Image 1 (cartoon, rainbow, N blue to C red):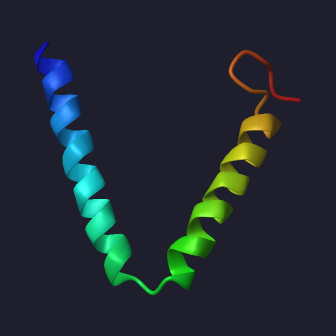
Image 2 (tube, rainbow, N blue to C red; image 1 turned 90 degrees about the vertical axis):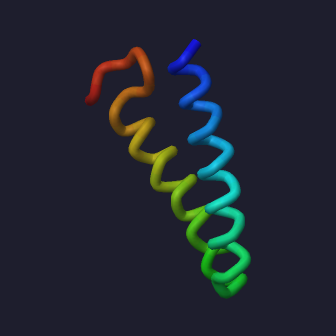
Length: 56
């Protein structure tokens, strides 16, 4: 239960800190970083074979 509480507190604190930071950044930066991160993560995920696949 202690681990769950620590994860909950960390997630809430990270959410508030991320929202605060995102409001201070210029709008084009998060709009570019978020999709770029999603595309890079997706490509790496499939290149490595997914959760149960072997790399090719």
